[in-house]
Length: 337
Image 1: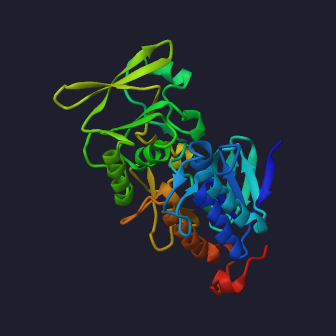
Image 2 (image 1 turned 60 degrees about the vertical axis):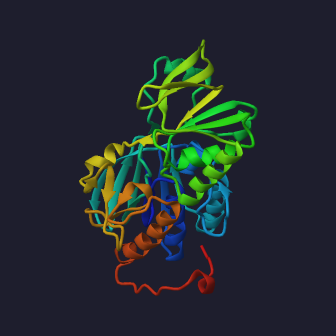
Image 3 (image 1 turned 90 degrees about the vertical axis):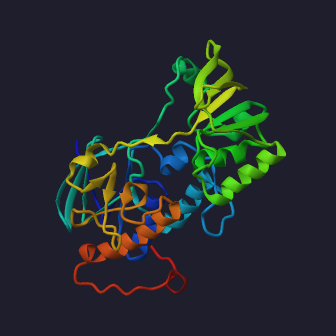
């Protein structure tokens, strides 16, 4: 039997940007339904790295991903959004003011506007091409996400990658693991300059071992028990790093799934939007967060928050035609459901 749900706005993706979009819509008296293929809200923050510290959220010098989701949940609670979790949106039909979405779980959702906040889409790790990898994955010796730091206490950890995730986890594990070695094929990291500077400082003190310019070459061990990670430089020189755990952070594969067939303009697996409104090439359909792209786009959570606000204000005329939008600051307006 088809379940029919009605709301003003459908938000596809319940990560940080999608959750904040509920708040921004709620402040404008627009009701929302949150849809996510996962069985819980939080997106990658909840599913992949709940204990990963995030350093660039205003007013929080550092906040774990799971705590950020808890704070966002508390912020949207007054607006009581409907939730359709464990469903993937497969179909979109209709026009601005009268859209119908269908999910793989049999839900039919009738809304006036749509916000795509799907992050990287259906996400999965980019795996290193190493012989025998599957056995070490199965035993947990090779992990792509850290759900609990304490599980790595006393372990010899090798981290591979040059971006924010690799650098952040090297810093987060330096006082937990027995040893941390950070492998990157270049001497320069792509992380935020302050985080990269901290890596250099802790490398100088011996808390973290920098292994550059090297890349992964082989895994050593048997029966899923890892004993070492072999790395090689561009000249073929090799080193063996003692290791109990390998954390390769080479990003996530991108798969927008059925969304890519809806007719929205795409650019490198992202959805192109108008930077002034975050509206896609389909009128009434908006995209925010990591899934959205435009000139000057920064892939930061705080940018997704800003896009949520812009999209909410831009769609007001679609959701409430004929009503005047009187912008007010939350400090003077307050929050009311």
